[in-house]
Length: 312
Image 1 (cartoon, rainbow, N blue to C red):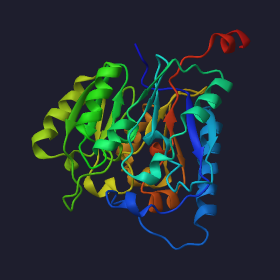
Image 2 (cartoon, one colour):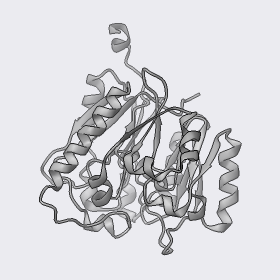
Image 3 (cartoon, rainbow, N blue to C red):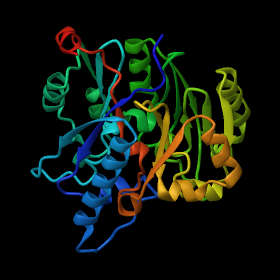
Image 4 (cartoon, rainbow, N blue to C red):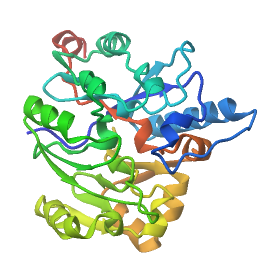
């Protein structure tokens, strides 16, 4: 059985962080900025997250972004790739042209193999872009890895057609639902409104359309997870954009400082039962990029190569 969490993660160090106007059309969390220090601040926040995770015992692999072409959202690799315990690398169809250049499977595979991970097959869903079908990785799909299930909120970035191909290729079953922000706009990524740990889940049930709300909650609770419900007012603080990781010191729950501040004390106490909370300040990335800590992390569930195991 696959594990929900891993102790190894991929981060992409941005080379041209900025506001992506095309992506912001479907991401209400992203805000334009004329700050001349934007890139410097984003790099500082990236480095702070890397340090916090490394200090907590998480194994970090860093892929450096390339400056040409400029990729303002490169700091969010979980949207274009997911890495699985059977050795599969899945590449995803991205909704905006600027983000498609983020997919660098050859560079990533070389980095992974250098660090002792084995990629045995690649599933490329990118062809759906030509038909207007988008699926932005574990932003769109919240994976329940042990049960081979996924949860996905329909949006301009999350389409049923590539989901069906993902399910067939990976042996998953995806639970589709609708969710909206207070203005009635589809929430752009599922991981903004829910997250799954090994024994817990965080969900903004208020955002889920009424007809889908109770069935979704039942499916989460039937998986044996304790459900922590948050309110609409907390959603914009990225409280659902958290991720459980393994580490040499035990489980950790990574989130931004804004997310930690957005939880009520009783909710934080519930989370602390499942792991050490590790937070990092990423206000520039949140405000301008419209994503938070979970969006910055692509989990590495790949097997280790035999040579790396012998070397260990």
